Amino acid sequence: MTTATAAGLNTGTWTIDPVHSAIAFSVRHLMVSKVRGTFDTFSGEIAIAEDGTPSVRAEIDVRSINTKNEQRDGHIRSADFFDADNHPTATFVSTSVTGENGDYVLTGAFTLRGVTKSVSMPLEFNGVNPGMGHGEVAGFEASIELNRKDFGISIDMPLETGGTVVGDKVTITLEIEATKAA
Image: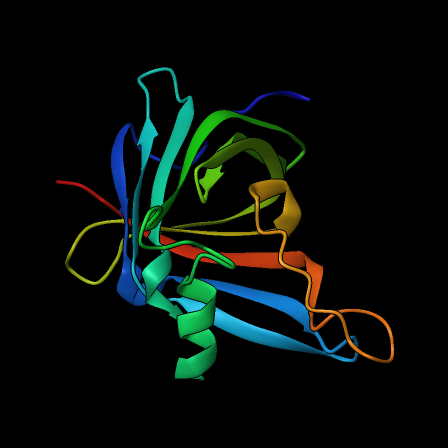
C-alpha cells in the first residue's frame, strides 16, 4: 500500500465532535455472550498537512467507561483492569495512513494502562459534508480487535466449568465525525 493523502479533506485541523461520534467496545462474557459498552469522554484531532498527508491524535478518558452497570464499571476502572487512578487516559497517535482504491489502514501507537503498542486498523472514510452552518464535517469508521493481555490487563477469573468470565479479545469500534476548525 502507498501513503494515503486525504482526498476530500481540506488542509488544516479537523476536531473530533464527541456529540456526533462514538467509541464502543465488546468483549466475551461467561464464554457465551458479550458485554458491550462505550467510552463517553474522548477528544482528538485530524491534521491535514499542505501535501494532503493526514495525521491523527486522540485521547480517551477510561474513567468514562459505561457498560450500563456501575458495579462492573467500577471494577473495570480498578487496578484489575484499567488502573484508572494511575492511568486515566488511553491515547492514540498515528504513524501512517496507507491506502489504495479506497481501502485505508490507520497505523499508530496506542497506549493503554501505561503500555504502548503499534496497532493497525482498517479505516472507512465516509466523505465530507458542508455541515449545518458550523463548518465542514467529515465522517470515519474503524474497528480493531485487541488482546487485553497485550496491555497488561491479565486478570483471569476462571469459571468452574472451564473458560473465563472475561475473554481476551476486545473489539473497539469507532464512529467519528470531525469538524473543520475555522
